[in-house]
Image (cartoon, rainbow, N blue to C red; front, side, top):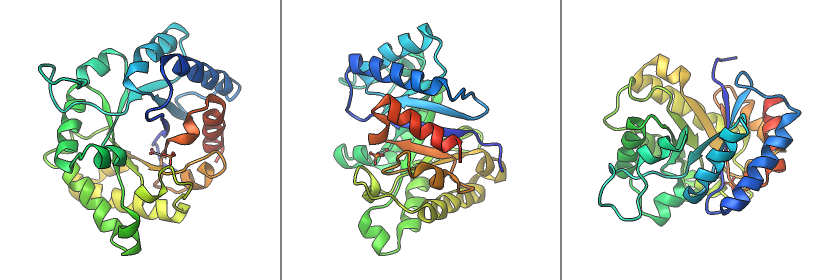
Length: 261
Ligand code: PGA
């Protein structure tokens, strides 16, 4: 048993326009109502596309919903001449609590390096957003058994230049690339192995206090029927969920299953 609050974050990726987002959040909130969840059980977070965030904010604040929300990316720059970018301060102004940084799809599609990821973390922290830093290996690296070394290296480089005080509250999501959107889930033992290695490394670099308070999520084909087993591991503090978070009722079922572990 530890004091870390279970975190279930639904990354919608490039799905749901703002009208669909309103419907999905309403259905999620309704489906969670009978579970009577509160902050002592878990946090449930939706991570919609940028264009939905204002609508989600209006709904969450207007209906006083017990849900948090975040963004899928953030600019490393301060507001200014950066066409197409979204500043961290804009996201906190919209009431975002979290921002996903370094998702493998952005690393692959947008060539985001660990150095860029580190600058985005800095921007997020300066706007009081909690970064959800994504790390994880490819299938090839797993087959070569270099997955732990690779993932820890990615984390070390993404966190270069920060100290323990900067990183309090940080969330790390272990997402093996081969398990994302493929239906292939890492086993609970695979998730536990990496979460434990991440926690040990955090302890070595930043001290035991940060290691014990940092939440470590697993992501990659998490569904209502496998989440309980995954979050049962002592070092796994929740899940970053893609496909199974798009439907409000499905994501609610997943959250209930995780809490009931
Ligand atoms: P998935 O995506 O649940 O659809 O595999 C997870 C993620 O990319 O965060």
